[in-house]
Length: 310
Image (cartoon, rainbow, N blue to C red):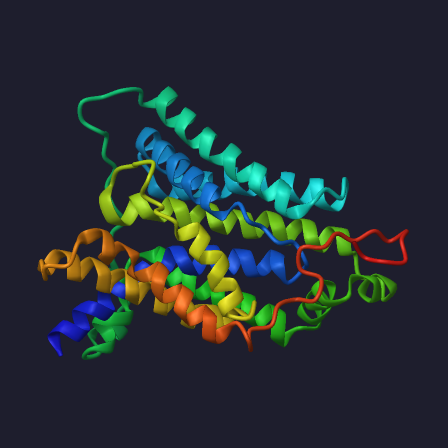
């Protein structure tokens, strides 16, 4: 029981980067905007979050700065796809490379070349009174940092908005048939813009969480492909917030399992161990992709003057 408790306790915070980034991807995707810049935005969020936290001395401000810079990139994506009607995939890839370059440039300009990398304090745990005292569940679910609680709360709010409100129903209709939504008076351009901005901001926070909870320092390779896994997770969850939570638990579990196998020294090459989350994701998607449904107009721009949506 002790090993299971330890495994699950490690898995919950490992879910946070996947959860925040995937929910951000789902948010814009349900309005029809397919964002593929997650990997770059997570790297940029990690760099900006770390640098601001290091200079200001506040992880909260660092997380806010990560949200702001990634949201700015999201605004560029929204403008280029809703106003200029450029190809979403091409713009997303361009922003991915721009974010990667900006992250490296900012770190070198602010920190420079040092013999010892600077450190920031990692996030403190805040046990929830009473709930954290529950045997097994208290340690697993209610003894984590505040970002963990916020990630699950955000997931619940997005689910409630999409499936329990009239506004959410109207919002989901945009990704299915924006022409019909527009005819009912729904502002398609505004919905696509705010969802892409907020969704991108969540991706940036997901990246900033990594140095703030794991190492206390920033390295360029610390995102380690999680941004690409997030896109697979959105498809795997059928672009539904509640299923994304389950998918995030699966990816986090594979990540923790790989790390524990590497630490245990079981004689398997560490390169193979690091492949586990990606291989597992591919295998699951092979079987799950048949029933996983995506928004009908995902990745397609809308022109209200045209008969067709392109």
